Image (cartoon, rainbow, N blue to C red; front, side, top):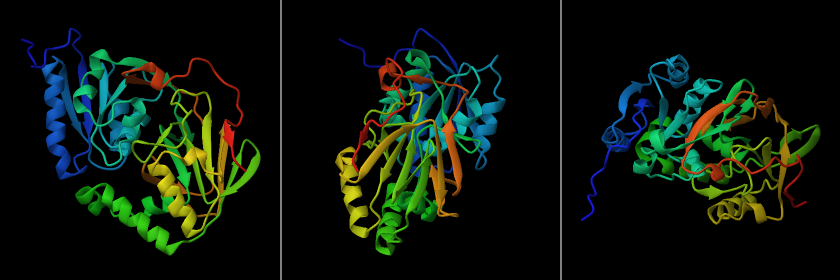
Length: 319
């Protein structure tokens, strides 16, 4: 008979888990379960609690490489982004525990919401070295965007988000569609100017959870991708929403995807800009591929790295 109890992994790690205590009541039990999985594998676990915005970055940056083998970012994409910013350029690899609202990064790695699988990464994960892109001086793992989605992020009530999770975004999205600002975003991509209703600068294929927006993009790419959705009308926003839910954004006739080294979201001046689900500033903003690496633990390197570098050119374009 197969013993289904968890057996300690042969490799024992010193694991620092950085978690956000205000991520929501529903996540506390999942965090306890994740820690149980880690300890069942024989790891030495130290729990570090964040005290406010930006604190996760400071904790990660101050961890001693002599006493920590792996850092786990336990939370949503915002918490993961903060921890990553503290580890960029450092030798300590990062793993994750997907405890957030959208968990885009977890889907990008192929982990989804499987905490037991995530707990295997400190000892069984493969190390991938990626170069996070920069929005101003801030590194980001997934995307930066301007348009309706950034306005939704700017409008979401943080207390309501902790209580009802994704529904807080759905409610804000409905309000955005009803309001229908029809704002045109101006973006400069490697010196060429474009206009769109929604502009997404991404280093990942997934967006807003398990949905695929840029199928060929990988975290390990030596470029960043720019997704431009040109429509600004209420109908266009609804159409984009349905296309996202069915993974058909890349097939829309008014969608364009470009690859780039440097992007600038020019305006309108003051237009909100979000990154990985958090508001990070306003237009104008410079975005470029970073030059310092981040080490991440992944179940499958092919989900993150591409076999060979490709030229900086459009992959698909509908005009």
